[in-house]
Length: 47
Image (cartoon, rainbow, N blue to C red; front, top):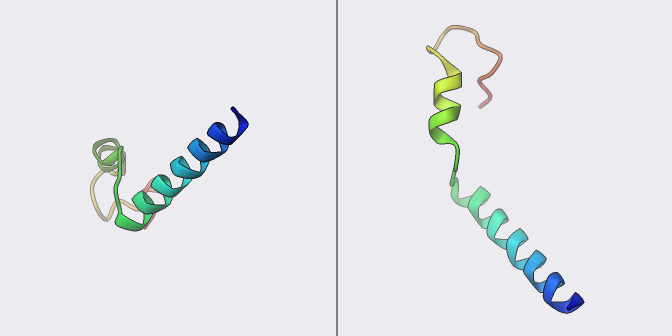
C-alpha cells in the first residue's frame, strides 16, 4: 500500500511538473476575468 501511494504521488508530481512546463492552465478564464482591463495597474496581474 505504501509503495502504491508513493508511486501515485510521484506520478501526480510528474504530471503537475509537465503541466507547468507545457503552460497548461486550469483557471485561465477566472484569471483573465480577475485581471481586468490592461493598463489599469491592477495588483492581481502577475506575469
